[in-house]
Amino acid sequence: MEQTLITTMMVNGTQVTRSVPARQHLVDFLREELGLTGSHLGCEHGVCGACTLRVNGEIVRGCLMLAVQANGCRVDTIEGLSDSKELEKLQAAFHRRNALQCGFCTPGMLMAAQDLIRSKGKATREEIRAHISGNYCRCTGYQAIVDAIEEVING
Amino acid sequence: MKAPSFAYAKPGSLAEAFDLLERPGAKILAGGQSLIPSLNLRLSAPELLVDITAIKGLSGIEVKGGMARIGALCTQARLEKSEEIKKHLPLLGEAVSHIAHPAIRNRGTLGGSLALADPAAELPACAVALDAVLVVASRKGERRVSAADFFKGLFETDLGRGEILTGVEFPQADKSVFLELTRRQGDYAIVGLAAVTKGAERRLAFFGIGGKPVLLKPKSLDEAKASLPAPAADLYHTASTKLHLAKVLLDRAWNRL
Image 1 (cartoon, rainbow over the protein chains, first blue to last red):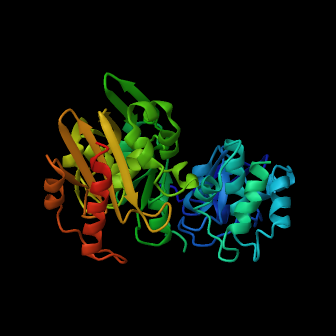
Image 2 (image 1 turned 135 degrees about the horizontal axis):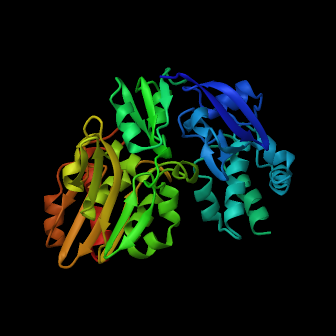
């Protein structure tokens, strides 16, 4: 059986085809093969959320998906969403509100927050906290992050 | 850490999947939200992952005649958002919102949760409370197992080699309550309770207190409390704390049933 498979996916609008070891997860593929180092690896077992990506329009844990599982999928990373300006308001609010310190969790946090903004018109602070509950931040204490998301989502 | 090396195959049909599952060290991959962490932590070392997500017809939700038939590949996020589930099987809709976090529910599947049989997981307890029937396919054909018989113990089910859980039939209940206590949102339960009323019968399935869901069919609240088995302690909670918390959930649920 094949331990290495030809895999094709659309990453941030560009089609890429590579020979991929079956055991390689999607974030390692993006970082090591494509040089897209915005998606971070914290815990590498699905707890911290630093690797949050969008696959076929839905957020996923990039460390809990094999690159070969993304064959035929559309993958959007923090780089793509930054370049397309989709995250512009959120990034500005994070900056203004001091919603990051070391910044390690920020790409994943932005991806999770944007998912809530896309799916809901308004959200309470509790709903915001529930939605980012799987994204750990060890610096800020979350208050400023919730402030920033609330500012964008509630206008 | 990084997963050990393994081969990967993505069959397009059940027949093809059964062939692949006969190979040594083959393991089924669905959403991968428990399997991939266990690979990354090197707790599991399969030789071949058989990705069943391309097999058609295993992800539908169909409600008919007091029964919801749900495909094993239906994601937890889809269960959570489904209006049909909200209306006909609210217990499941409430339960899935307690599973991990949105990014995980987008990939985690109903069948995966049931086949893994984590003792602190929500969906096995729901299946037991609702008296669900699990549909298991293999090269020999299809067989149906009641949830009570499917869960054998800690991460242990009735699934045999070469078998694939393809779907679940959930009978509707008259009333239902889902309660769970966790340390943080999205964690596995300290103690949880999936409870339903069907006619005069109350069916209470506790999770997080034993190796598998614990089903009680009590006539009274006192009887329920007295018949709770002694729970096993976990890393953070003693057996007596867990027993106390199980009784707290019972008190909260009882009058809503």
